[in-house]
Amino acid sequence: MDIAAVSDEKYRQLLMQQALFIRKHEDTIKKKAKRLYQIVKSDKQPKLNKRCCNYGVYLYNKLVL
Image 1: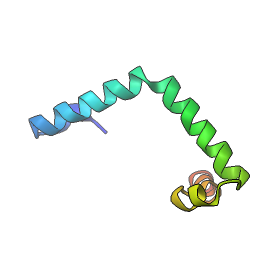
Image 2 (image 1 turned 180 degrees about the vertical axis):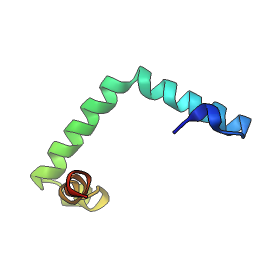
Image 3 (image 1 turned 180 degrees about the horizontal axis):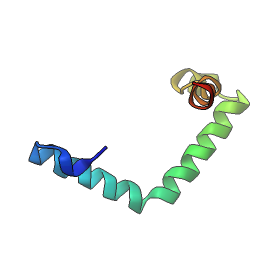
């Protein structure tokens, strides 16, 4: 997404703040996402699996479609 092209000033500022936050915390976000993936893949917490995306379907669609 081209944040600079967003015409709404407040929305553009929000997007910029979010992008900065993500860049600043990128390693932590990736570590937590990897851990969540491992937990969901293990099927040890059924309640959590119900709330999370189906990674197998998601990855299949990203790679094949």
